[in-house]
Image (cartoon, rainbow, N blue to C red):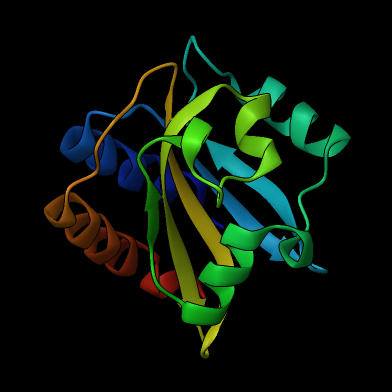
Length: 144
C-alpha cells in the first residue's frame, strides 16, 4: 500500500469531516493489521501500532467488524460510549465517534478506513459518508 496515497486521501477526508485521526487497517488472517494513520498530537502512529499489537482486534469477535465485512457498507457510530455496536478497541484510544469505510475488492472486505473522533462527539452526515466513500474508491482503486 502506497502510504503517500493514503496520506493524500486522509487529508481530503479530514478537510471534509474536520476529523484528524484517520487510520487504515488490512484484514489479515481474520484480524486487523494497522498499516498507516495520520500523525496527530492526540494519537501518534507508534502508539496506535503498539496498542493494536498488544490488543489484537479479531473480526469474528467484533460485532461492528462482522457487520461491515458481511454488508460491505460503511458504518458510523455517533456516541461510542452508548452504542452496543462499539468495539472494545474504541475505548483503548478514547474514541467518541467513528466512521468505518470498508475497502472492498473482489467482493471481499480486505481493509478498512477508520475516521475517529477522539475526545469529542462528531455527527458524520450522510453527505460526508458518501463523499468519503467515493474518495476512498477513487484513491484506492489502483492499489489492488
